[in-house]
Amino acid sequence: MQFKCNQNLPERAVHIALKGPDGGCKRGDGSGCFIASNVASTPGDMTERGCTYAGCRGVVGGPVKDAIQLTHGPIGCAFFSWGYRPHLADSDFHMKYTFVSDMNESNIVFGGEKKLLQCIVEASQEFPDAKAVFIYNTCATALIGDDGRDVAKQAEELIGKPVVFFECEGFKGVSQSQGHHVGNETIFRQLVGSVEPEGDFSRTINIVGDYNIKNDMRTFEPLFEAMGVRILTRFTGNVSVEDLKIMHKASLNVVHCQRSATYIADMMKDKYGTPYINVTLWGIKHMSDALRQTAAFFGLEAEAERVIEAELAKIMPQINYYRQRLTGKKVFIYQGGPRTWHWIELLRELGMETMFAATTFGHDDDYRKIFDQIADGALVVDNPNVPEIEEILSVHKPDLFISGNKEKYVAYKLGVPFVNGHTYDTGPYAGFSGMVTFARDIDKALHAPIWKLLRSHARSAPLRPGA
Image (cartoon, rainbow, N blue to C red; front, side, top):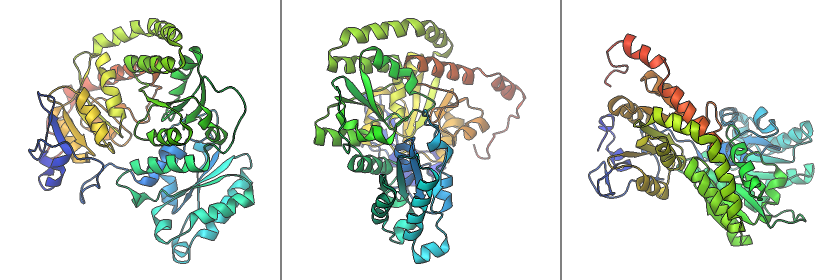
C-alpha cells in the first residue's frame, strides 16, 4: 500500500509493507521484495530519526553514572541530549549535570582543541569524585578537524583518570543506530579488560543492553539473583566506570537490546571467549525464557522453575483481570528498534493484537522478527514520518498507540489513547511485576473518561485539515 500523504514522496513506498496471508510481505511499490531499512532518509521526508551522536551520548554512554558527560560542540547538542532518557541509577550525577565545550563562531574558525582540554581539566577539578570523562564529538568539531583523540590522551595524563573520546559526530551514520556501534566499540576498546580483579566469577553474568529506564532492573535483577546468579556489570544502566572495566570476567552475557548492544557481546566473544544469549526481559513468556536459558547455562534449571512459579503466582490474578478488559484491542507500536518486536508477544498475552508496527532505526533482522510475529494483514513501516503516523492514527484508527515522547502529542490531538513505551510515563515495565504495571497503564489509557467526553462533545469536523 501507499500513504496518501506520500503522493509527492514516492520513494517512501519501499519502506512500507503489508504482511500477506501466506506469511510473506508486499511492499508499497507493489513488489514482493522485503521492506527497505537502515538507509539514509529521503530528502524532504519529515523523519523522526536522531543522529549518531544521539545514539552514542543518549543511549550507550550517557547512563554511566560516575563519568563526566562532556559534549564537544555547540551548546544546543548538549542541551537537547540532557535528561531526556530516565536511565536511573543509585547516583543521579549523570542525569543532574551536563557538560559542553560550548563551541562558538570564533572557536569554529580557530579550532577548539585548547578549549576542549581546558573544559576537561576544569570539569575534573570541579567534580573530583567522577571516575572518568566521556567526550562526545559532534558535527561541527568533526568538520573543522579537531583531534579529540589527541586531546583525550593529553587530558588523561593531566587528570590521572580515563578520558574516553567517542567519534560519534552526528552525520556519521543514517540514524542513531550508528551511535550505538561507536559507543560499544569505544567502551570495549578503552575500558573493558583494563582491570583484572580477583575472585570467583563462575556464576556471574552481564546484563547487556538494558538502560534501566524507570528502574526496569529492579524487576528482574532479584530474579537472577534468586536463582543463584550474580550480575557483574550492567551495560549500561546503573553502571559505574569500574564495572565496565571488569565486565570481561563474567561467565555469560545476557543480551536484552539486540540492536544497541550485540556489538559488545560479539567483541567479547571474539576476544575473551565469553558466550552470550539473546533474551527479552519484557512479558511473561519472554522473562520466563530468559531465566530458563540463563539457568540452563549454569545448571540451575530447578532454581529457575521455582522462581518463575513464585512470580507467576503473584501476578496472574492481576494479569487475568487486565486481559478481560483489553482483549480484542488493536495496537500501533512505534519504537526505536527491537522494542517493537519485543512487545508483540507481550501484548498478545494481554489479548491485544499488533496491527501496525514501525521502528525508527530498525535493521533487516528487526523487520524479519516483526514479520515473523505479527498477524496477517498487519502494516509495517520503516522510519515513519509525521504525516504517515497521523494517517495511520486518523484513517486506520488503532485502539492504542505505543510510542515515545515526540509522538504522544500527535496521538492526544487525534484522540487516540497513548502509552509512552520509550521512556515510560510511570514504569518500570520489564520483568513479571513490570508486566502488571504495563497492563495497568494500558488499561488506564484506554478507559480514561476523557475519551467519552471527547467523542460526545468534540466537533465532528476532522481535527486536521485534509485528514
